[in-house]
Amino acid sequence: MAQKILIADDSAFMRIYLKRILAEAGYKDTIESADGREMLIRYEQERPDLVILDIIMPDMDGLEALHELMRLDPKVNVVMVTAVGQEYMMKECNKAGVKGYIVKPFKEEEIAETLVKVIGPGEREVK
Amino acid sequence: MEKVPRLTWLERDALREIASIGAGNATTALSKLVKRRIDVVVPRLSLVELRSIPEVMGGPEKMATAMYSRITGDTSGSLVVLFERESSYLVVDILKGNALGTTKTLTPEDFKSLEEMAVILSRTFLVALTDFLGLKLEISDPGVASDMVKSLMDTVLTEFAIKSDYAMLIKVEFESPPVKVGGHFALIFDVTTIDRITKTIHEKLGEKRTG
Image 1 (tube, rainbow over the protein chains, first blue to last red):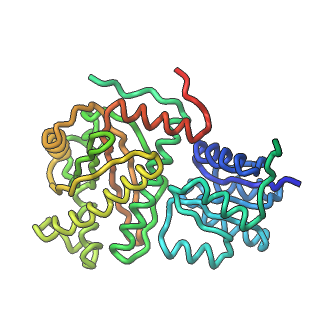
Image 2: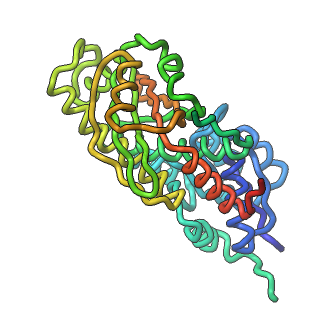
């Protein structure tokens, strides 16, 4: 069964961009949310295999959302994809249990490589 | 006169995200410099005519401190980092490890500190942008001045012989409790560059730009 990935980022551009990268890597089942609060609702509804989470977001930022998400499901797979590269933030996210931390701007292959490590390879079409 | 380019909401969103990446990376560099946690609030981006920048900053006679650099390479332009004067005093206090409120006027030593910070802030901001957009750009060592906003902008435009009529203005708030400092990054590019940037945006989205 195809892995389902939830992309939480306040930028529509970034969500579409990540969706394209994921599709090319074989992860075609993606859902989206534009802030932390919406991400939590979508996670409960859809129970995706992995969450890609931004930090700088309005309403509920990624860090607060991460802690809420971990309370909801301590086994959730989260990969942070954010422009915040400060050490304290990386430490806090790692302590919370994230499986990956990618700093924007990223190389497209970084995304796929990290996801492969966490949830295994995506489904590639055989031509 | 060049017109402020008309962008779709998605192109604007992409520019805001690119600005956010630049600001996030610059904040990381700043945090390392001052050895304290700094958060950045979601930046706001607008495309504005250069002549309207003083108004956006609170009026032409508003006192501010500017750190400005020339951009060369695939395109030419300028990056101006603007802080209200009082905010720049707080920045100096943080940079020098002073008690907040110590700085009441900028000394030559303070300008030097701001210049060092501007080198790191501007370079990191631009590197993040160029990495993301695949542009080859270089940035000069910054000049630092404190004056009325209009005078500061006139200095930048004259010194760098800027031909463009508008700028990408990014409003950023840095927060390091108990301090909250607001600043602006003004990226001054020509229309051709904005066109190139939007082309890259569409390529990243896996689509070809029409029209």
